[in-house]
Figure 1 (cartoon, rainbow, N blue to C red):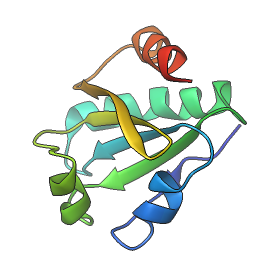
Figure 2: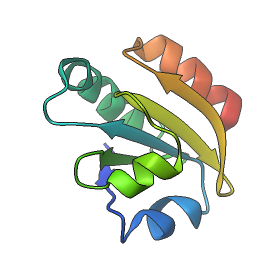
Figure 3: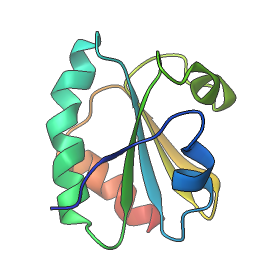
Length: 107
């Protein structure tokens, strides 16, 4: 299973913006109930798309400038990046199938 990386203000550009493959970024917070429910789905997606999709988690409390830069106003918010640009956005708790469908359209 592919690991879910954690990005900070300092590592976001390297991990996401300069990535050679598409990236799913999970903006979440430790206090967020729906984020906790989404976490296993995000980990499953990381495993299912191993080698084709990079999965990165950003804690909005630890990296507020990144969340602000991308207009993240509520958590969970998932952004799909390809070639350094946001290609899709999902706000709120979604099913694994719904998330897979969105990923498939981007990669």
